[in-house]
Image 1 (cartoon, rainbow, N blue to C red):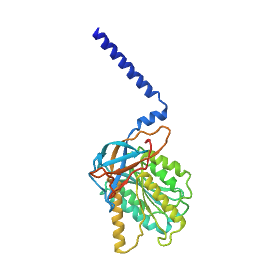
Image 2 (cartoon, helix red, strand yellow; image 1 turned 30 degrees about the vertical axis):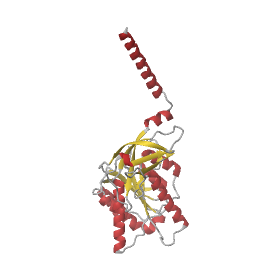
Image 3 (cartoon, rainbow, N blue to C red; image 1 turned 180 degrees about the horizontal axis):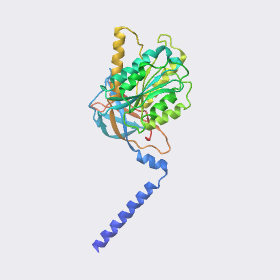
Image 4 (cartoon, one colour; image 1 turned 135 degrees about the horizontal axis):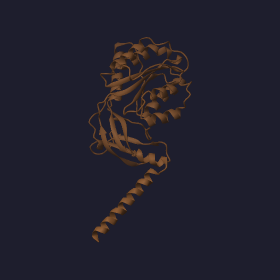
Length: 315
């Protein structure tokens, strides 16, 4: 009798399990998607007040919140795998004044790539894609392509160039980034900004930029808008936007060199956080917050956290 009851109980358990599995696999696509991406890996950088990367943080030192709710962080890994970066160089007419600087900035990252644990590709653009170098080629191929680039001309399809650059990654990997060298002007793209931001968020790509400044002392209204766009894209995706008044003095060159080296480390040295962050199926994206805590559990004000500000299910 006892054996029969146990067998009957096991059958009920199996039937319940089957019902649960059937329920899960028959859920609407939006609900099933929210379950599948309830736990995700998010790439973030933590910087001190000098812009240097902060190492050695445990999962408990991070605090993630959405709608006032604290989310569970089960991992904070600092891996040393090389990160992939597409260098996107603006060769439109509005960037003509800074053409030589653009070439030097792109070349500097290419020659620094191996030492900084980076794998680089290249996109040259104006109102269309002028040329490119894929990840399957070497950083030397990138340098050779930059030795002689065409004279900047034409309008600026900035969003189209970023969309093209994001597709060069094929299957996304943690830490994929685009390094955009541009004045930030946009006047010729087919893709809309909202669509671009959604696709980049889904692929987990971070945007870092170096803003080319035509006149740092008397910025135009157009220049201010362009700078705001670059800063917005960087903040939204967990990247960084640099705006430096470059001069030819010894101090100016040293200041630029230091800023670039910090930027490369910010791209390469990251934390991969594993966060339990279920999305509301009715929402495509959700804003969330991430901070670093001190030993007393208070938010640290001496560090800056670079993280994608909108949570979305990855592609």
